Amino acid sequence: MKFLFSAPLGLLLCLAVGCSGPQTGEPAARAALEASAEAMGGWDALRGVRSQRIVSQGSDWEPLQAMAPGDPLQVTNFSSVLAVDFAQPSARIEYRSDILYPREFPNAFTEVIQGEVGLLDHNGAQSRLHPARYAARIRDIKRMPVRVLLTASEAPGLTRLPDETVDETSGGGAARQVLEYRDSGLQVRLRIDPATHLPASVAYFEDDPILGDTWNEVTWSDWKDVAGVQLPYSLKLHLNELLFHEETIQEIQNNPSLPDTAFSIPDAIRQTPEEGERIVSQWVPRRVVSNVTYLDFGRPQRVTFEELAPGFWLVGVASHQTYVIEMNDHLIAVEGPLYEERSQPVIQAIKEKFPTKPLRYMIATHWHLDHSGGLRAYAAEGVTIVGSPVTIPFLRTMFARPKTVHPDALARRTAAEGKLPEIPMEVVDSMKEFTDGTRVVRIYPVPTSHVRGFLSVYLPKERIIIEADLVSDTMYRNPPIVEPRALEYYEWLRQTGIPVDRIARVHGTVVPFREFASIVEKAR
Ligand SMILES: [Zn+2]
Figure 1 (cartoon, rainbow, N blue to C red):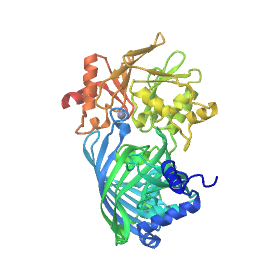
Figure 2: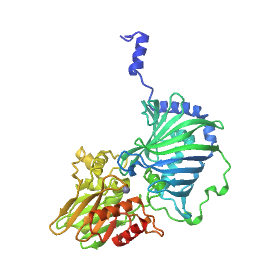
Figure 3: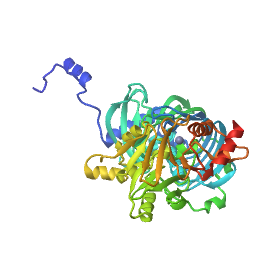
Figure 4: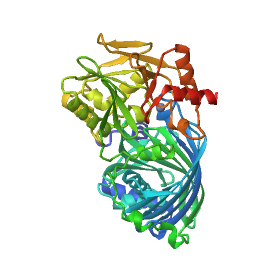
């Protein structure tokens, strides 16, 4: 029975259904690494590249800031010069971009890393590099094409998994050898093209506040010889197959002569203590390229309360506010931004401040990444999440996503109950009113070019309206920059005739309506 099939028939069946896959395990991984190193020019050639200078240009994308979930949104065209010395490592990134969203303006920064210390120079202001930004850069250095095989060969947990066929986002239905190892405490998959033996992609399994478990994958193509080493001239970065970054390399120098000062960091920066955790997540680099704040990420949160009107509270935590409205026997909150680490201290502070009034509703203005990332924590508390017909389906998908890299309260409840808990949610597609007989709270859908499915929350007796992203700080500069979304919001308020005295913003301070109106009127 051993030779049931004649050899040709057996071979045909094996080709059709795959009788014996490739070997798996560590020796098979090392054999694949050997072949890949050979294809790139050999281990000696790879180790011989002690430093590099890479000039490139490309574009950054932020689909979680688009008009609707699933839409693409390009946020920059950039150019960068990277100098890196792999020994320590030391690195210098000179990044220049044209930011395209929400309006066009130039941006530039320089980052310097020398060993354990990072420096940021942004518009001439120098500061210690944020720990999560530092951690992401160090990870990116370790997965650079010239280093990735060396990183894999020295990494714990190196093994080979069964081969895969990748989909078109990574290269058109092609076979891949798959190696797995751990780096920066994260699971990593290195995929190798079996036809060329060149590395095809490297993916880190990391946490994202909204996307949850996220494969952060860099894919390489357009390989060329650079002084005896094969290197790619094109790369793309996907998070869970969504495109975030495209880069074309114009020039690569191996072992360039770099000035001594390239990696120097002033003593004042060295002596500034690093504040926060070195969390590896693409969330921070994404915020960086869009030139929006990320500074609270991985840092202690300080919660403050300010009573703007009797029973109407601003709960401040730096860049994004939450608002709390006292009803006779419960609370309504507006906006659960950022991430779990922001929401938990706010939830705790609300419970301590209002021990007899449970938080019953959380109203989400819109689904954008920094505005919806903290909502999972409220969902885990059983708070009813209120949102637009665009926001609620998006949240349903995100709440159901696994979060095992960095489990949060909802992930823990899901694990304990064996399934996703029933999360009460309410869709608001036309004006909705909450009242306890005394206090009235109205939710209005607002048309805006910023996002589809935006909600504004209005207190008629207090004549206060809550908004996010539409009335930005740029309006209060001299000269003011009035964006279309501010004009649209003003037009909507005029057309609806809703009387407003104050605008309570999710970003920034509460502003008088009269001042907002006068700035907009001048810009019209
Ligand atoms: Zn937004």
